[in-house]
Length: 365
Ligand code: IPM
Ligand code: MG
Image 1 (tube, protein in one colour):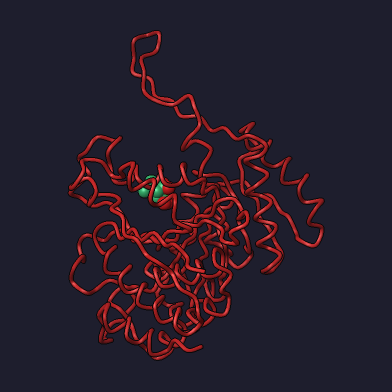
Image 2 (cartoon, rainbow, N blue to C red):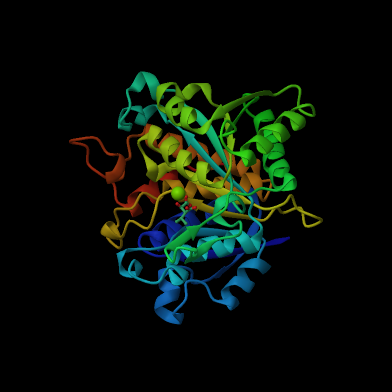
């Protein structure tokens, strides 16, 4: 069976890190015996330059027809002055909505070799392994009413709405329990149930669903407290599940625990697959397009490489290949190979190319 992979290199360092990750994928395919057929699409600023909009209907249709997608990064100062509707980021929101990618997985793992790269003390971050599970297609990002109008006093009046249906909450919280079962069996559901009705519903549904997962511990935490606990005692978290905007904020905070945003992968998943056996997912590094270093061979490809490992895990059921890629990353770091973002003072930094070579050398069946 051939797997149809949509490749979306995007802007800035996107094409460099995606290129590197595809080399790793090539090697994994020959080592583990599977094959992807790849088609490249323009998304973000590069699409604005060519077509005037960040994602064309043709690209959208092609990406939707694929089995899964790998994205680099979108955006950059060049497109920042544009109208809100045609900014590069809009492409991401359209992809999420139209592909039904309701679940965003952002694991923040502290590699022992890099614990000193965090802005927090080593004894706080050592051993941190938290999976932030963010709801991605609902809540205040998408719900209506939204927009800027005039109110009765003739003032400009801006509205967004935090709204969730029962089924939207249920599917993401259920996935949190399922993922926790494969980990340390603890779910922290983050809400603002002391103030927001929508959060109260979220919490009640989490409590109801918990009955189906008695082997998993469930705790609830208010979002302000969660922001504090993440830097006070991050090791208490296993799976942290939350709504779209809270998850946007807390996932950046969790990323900083690791001190090395160039290492963090992410997956955005749709509904579990029907008969193809492949679950649609959009995989991308957590970092942005880093226009300041684009094209200089300085980008760290590891976050995108680990995103490929997540793709093998969650969409393709190639667990052995996923573990082998993760091991190649750990072994490469242990061997002291460092791109500039994770190099410590005085250490010679590897280029994107050198890092990719080292990862390939360490990738074994
Ligand atoms: C993210 C980003 C996006 C978001 C932006 C770029 C639209 O911050 O993926 O976390 O807010 O979801
Ligand atoms: Mg964000």
